[in-house]
Length: 182
Image (tube, rainbow, N blue to C red):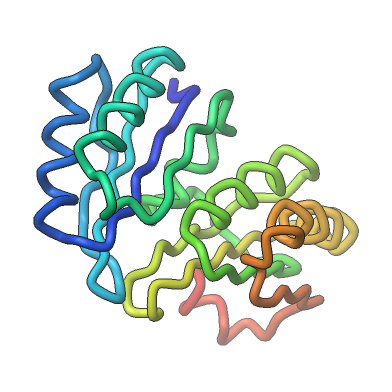
């Protein structure tokens, strides 16, 4: 079970690929994601025990130098977060809907983790910067009171930093929307 994730976001694709390789060589971590994101950035996501992920992030930061845009170390991550990032969530039906939108990829991951820990909701997706101008968003579903609570908690994680773009809670979303969310 994944318990800790680390992420590096770089504004150079070439350096991003190099950082991914160096992170894997520096510590006993598993690569979850390494890909380009908009606008011309590169993101690396790894998992392992806290010490290993911390060492990989530290090494990645040293190799990435001035190309590092953001980094994240998130211990005790909720089990729903990684499948939501990978687009493999196990959500079968759309109930009430919550949406959180961010300027930062790291902010979205932290918010998704906080939201799902705060309320009885299911993460649908954590979309990380691909095809959306480098922004990120989180979609989640559950009963309306739980969705409201999760959205509030998730939004509060990024409110002070200014990384929250917007949020929405939609009660009883139209069934036609389902095919575009699940």
